[in-house]
Amino acid sequence: MTIAPSTQATAAPAGDRTSTARHFLMCRPEFFAVSYSINPWMDPAKGADAGTAVRQWEGLRQAYESLGHTVRLIDPIEGLPDMVFAANGALVVEGKVYGARFAHAERAAEGPAYLRWFAERGYETLEPSFTNEGEGDYLTLDEMILAGTGFRTDVAAHMEAQEFLGRPVVTLRLVDPRFYHLDTALFPLDGRNVAYYPDAFSAGSQRVLRRLFPDAVIAAAADAEVLGLNAVSDGRNVVVNAEATSLALELKRRGFEVLPVDLSELRKAGGGPKCCTLEIR
Ligand code: ARG
Picture 1 (tube, rainbow, N blue to C red):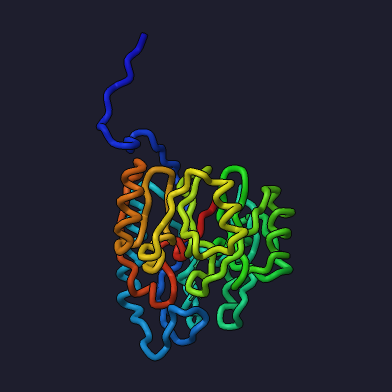
Picture 2: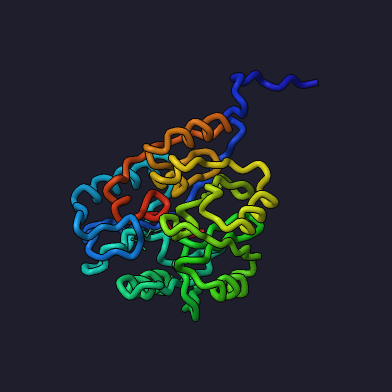
């Protein structure tokens, strides 16, 4: 008979959680600005500072590298201030790249720029026929892809992604304009479970989430309002906006390691850690 080694008396010791090494694509915010408004966070009258954004973004990149993840870079393009939000550039699953087609003209040129980056490196790519904003609205779990609609991504694109990637896509309807992308209201904790803010979703989608994820981490309004759900987990370590303090406590209680980051300058455009991060699966 073997006796399990003793662990600390926490709800779920961090040792129970395993991380997997990730490949991320990021874009340094050299040309970052808030010069137009396409979501309620953006106020062109207040603007934003590219120098501060670059410093904060470097902190995020270092957090990933300190966890052993690989960060690759795409060159920023002048005149595309939101290009820093790499999550919107594509959806990559098992080496297949489903391209983005942006809802707003201000960001339209980003779709082809990201798709070209992948095509030049030999990835199988699909130019989309329907409006979709990449990993902003598609979050990949082991057995399914959760897909947001309501503000940016068209439901027809959910079907297109499912056909191309061969993984079931579950449509979720977003209803609060502050949480205009799925990744502002929900993030995968690992391949099987998620954290989310219920009020960002329609009543029917809330029921779907409860059915799929009875053990989810439920975030409060205060955490959602600092874009705390725009987080990145590797299965063990969660990189999350520093202001989301009660979410951080709950994650620790569940046995996750929390790495807080300050991305307050990027939040002026409505973005957080996950928005800046496209996973190359
Ligand atoms: N200003 C950008 C927009 O409204 C922010 C995008 C944030 N990205 C994200 N994955 N939520 O499109």
